[in-house]
Length: 569
Image (cartoon, rainbow, N blue to C red):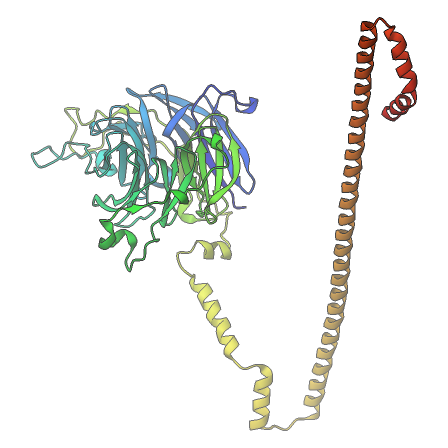
């Protein structure tokens, strides 16, 4: 069965959650086919962009400590706490479908790359002047993009950082482990990054900043493709699964879709030189408004696998669902009390895809240790250190899961040859004349003499066919009768249901009328008691006997009081 789930992390606050969510900082929630909380992990508090998910583990950078919490998805518990020399402000998983590399953005403006299967840790230069608050890895796991509060976005080569062979520093070369490119078109702090889904030579990234701009640019060349002027400052950004549009969240709780293909252009809108130099103004009226102002700021957004549903995490602890086609709010998916700072959609389950099947898996991570191999005097350039060990579990291929013809056709890169051949054979059969036509043509062009035996055989075949036709007619009649009976039963059930609903409505009306009558009787009784007290006080003030006045009023209203008491009983 097809299923979709997401991982959400929260930032601790003064609010008191329910008992089931006490001390919970990370939640794994199933979105399809039914919305349900699947598992939770405790003792975690994360800022935005401080959650990363691999096939085997969940990593969270803590908001108030210089540590990373590691949770095992397989065992469902906390595997370890990894300390670092400075606070981690953003994290991302690299290494393709296995997620063996964790990239960390630090408070000091540098990157730390941690190979979780070897424990090797490599640090870059402090190229950012302020903390690294946004990190994304491209689909090929060759490039890292880091955004900072210093308004710049650096592009790094992941293979270059992890390479054992470092080029010698010269006057024309950059320092070791430095960015290969810098994008500086923004004029304020970078708030979020979203990279495209292409594995080719050209791919885009959308960066948002506090200067109310969103810029789509090619990180392979560093060239800005299109600038969008947003009505508000975007707090987060996400790209459509096929890079047709991007989505942003705002401080007022609203979200907005910006379509790349809205402008009329003969070329691709992002690669048309005639529109690249002109910023596009995004309308304030096109925002998707939240159900209420109490939802708070949008901290994170994420799209489902098919791009039809947008999820947003808010400061009031709710995860909201938005219909992308209708461009409006749909429902509240979950409420975790504390501010939702990160949402990560997991790959859909139930879709067989050989390219995504894991051939190995890391059951446990290896805690990081600083890579000091290059500084050793006996280390040869380009040589792998002797203590370098790779820890993983090889998954043996299962022969029991034999692929079906449907799964093979579903996962094939194109139409399978067998399916094409079957289709051509069916098409050829449709074009051939039927047996009756062949017989008719044969009889008219070359009449043959029939013997008595041939005539008898033909008669017997005709009789058999007539019997089969009569049997089929009887079956059709039975099926038609059953269908009519079923339709009559459905109509009768619907009629009974309508009558039952009318009866229920009538009972509700009678109940409401009886309740109103009871309230009126109680009101009259209270009014009578009030009049008695007022009459007693008035009589006492005039020097008369108040009790006698009360007795007289009781005698006058005895009948009404008795009837009211009996009705109340």
